[in-house]
Image 1: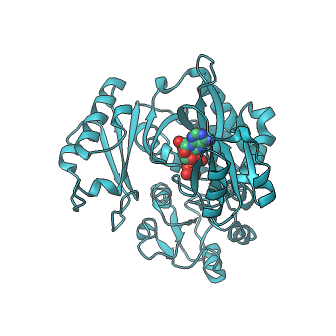
Image 2 (image 1 turned 180 degrees about the horizontal axis):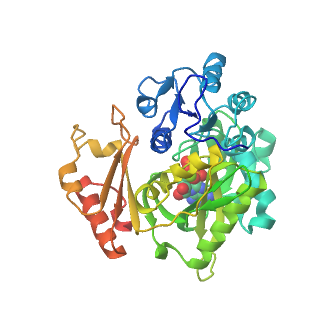
Image 3 (image 1 turned 90 degrees about the horizontal axis):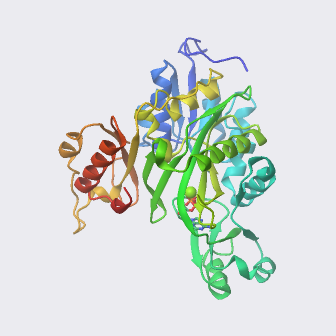
Length: 404
Ligand code: ADP
Ligand code: MG
């Protein structure tokens, strides 16, 4: 496709406008990256207070499938991207009839459904060299009845709409599995074998319309209660051989479906008796990812910069990480004390620490578990980054300290 430059003036007499489906924090950081390059932006999200809508030139406040809203978005925008995977694939298809849309509807549809996603990973396994956890699809009582016993204990996951550990139930035996599936109202699910995790990591790549692909080194992620708590991003964060395999696998997973845009693939490192452990592919997100937020302060090109470059057909430079980094996720819990009373986190103390970069998403209300912001910590060496992260985590009362 012809590159879309910010200097290109649209019919409305504005610099080229880039659109994003969804107005959450990922959309907000995309908008900031696009605006830095001089683009105008348009966000489609029904919420009048959406974090991205509040900072965008245009905010179309309709549902994601609203024909009028989609028509407005395509009339305004030179290209459109998405910031969450549950945007209806049909809406992306509608937009794609008149505008470049990256990632495309077919790729997003795979990422929105764990059954399709796992089939994709299985189809790629020969090339990617990585398999997913043993699993069974459960869409009917007949499939439930023949679930192999060696998948238990396991995790039952809804095929759609799961995120941050939601829509998942851990089950030890067939009786618990049957009860859990009934509890999930019998919606399509996958049962995955519970694996002995040594660690978790993710890889973020960006692929262009011409097939060029670039990306970041893997980051190691620590989850608490199913939600990302800490990302470790530095050279020694995992064994080099595993890191190379994860990067190569992510590229083949993107190439296999002609993906265009930023893609994040999550992996498990499992204890398989080998020296470094085995690599298992978990899931993919068709967009920038929470685990890539450190790139905003520790790299010369961030994951959001790459999202802008990929969708507009600009070159995809190889990012360079110039500082070791740790990212601490800031959930709404930080805005409450132990007694459940509202408090303002002690930003004064946190920001007095060297190399702290605070990102807040402009959300008006804090709720436990709600992603409110993140704190990136960079420094001249890993020891100082770790020490600062530890101090910040203590000040903020963050979980997962033992694993910092
Ligand atoms: P989500 O869409 O909520 O991120 P995931 O499939 O990534 O769903 O699961 C959330 C977390 O649950 C993972 O990051 C991991 O810590 C744990 N988990 C998921 N699947 C397995 C598994 N098969 N074995 C062990 N732990 C798992
Ligand atoms: Mg996940």
